[in-house]
Length: 512
Ligand code: MSP
Image (tube, rainbow, N blue to C red; front, side, top):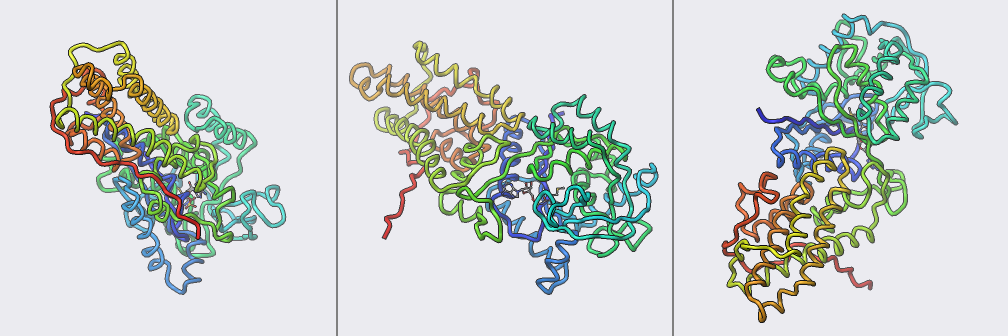
């Protein structure tokens, strides 16, 4: 049986248009999902939309439509975005689906049976933006620490016995130091839990847009309990075929989230699962936030970045590369035109694009359009660079398993730089006259380097890498990671076409 890998994005609130922050979380997962598939894993990659709650109900009311019609429309925008940005999610879950109601209700009933939910009444602060409860001590000037305005809520409510899970959670963090990453987030979560946990209100009675609480129609489930459950719904929990699917899919290998929602994923979610007797996900990774030209991104500032515009302006693969290369994954980052153009023209057009174009042009012109054959013997310089190339996969695996996408790309570009130095040192254009066979060997080393590089950048730049591999005449079924390394070196001999540049340069428009 093949190794399996299950990863998830947060499910997105439908009160908003998708923006660069949403695209970023899903992109990181997409790169990882593609990487694992190429590496032979049976992958399940889940994304979707979070459609209940007071905020969504309000947004629908503001538009004068019922919440179902509203969520149908906005959810579709998110679904469309996945196709536009070339995301390869295997499922798209909506919390308004029947399968999700079943799963939430099964979880609820299990928590009731296990004595972890009880009826009480809530009196306290609630932020509709973020859908979170806050203690008096967390409120300053009518605002939550997230900056969201809060309102006073007083209503009957079911509570989850979160306080009973403090020690179990701490023990889990200690026994599984990779459960939350980066380390700084684990520390943050740990000190929050160590500070003491109050029982958590898990139902609302003052509005109706949610999953009904089984046996009590006056309540809907708290939207975060409902939302988090999506991860098990899609794996088969509470479904008719649960026994066939759930044990082989769950626990998830990775929940990718933004830093703002780590508490929900690393405290509440594992506590719910412990209480239900369901295994915990293996890891929660919290990435940082993007600003736009140095400014916080917000609707009120009017500086929300539409990922579709960015992809149209700079190119989709260029955007994907930029987002994963520019900022150490886990840190905050700034999106700026200059930085984008710098990466696009530097790393892509100059470093990799020119290399590929030069090498293939030389082969096309000087070798009658036929790829040189694998050399019988290699020179020391050839071995040095090939050793670097052949060793890439192992380090890529390490970086991807640690969600360090920028490091993975940096390692590949170190090899690209080495190949650029090699081509200058070997000067195959001069060898053409002095040592034609040696020229062929040098071009083969370079083409072999490009082949492995193109295979390895597929997770981040699926279209550009496909174009490179097409130009190298690598068959579709020879593009997996089993084709990397010394044992899989290309034999050569295939006829190639006249190459065309793969990475365009961004040319600034003349200012009027
Ligand atoms: N619906 C909840 C998640 C429920 S998961 C069980 C939610 N939705 S959200 O639409 O508000 O946010 C989804 C993700 O987008 C979060 O991971 C958040 O961190 C991310 N981002 C929103 N703005 C962002 C930036 N400016 N930069 C990077 N990511 C940001 O929270």
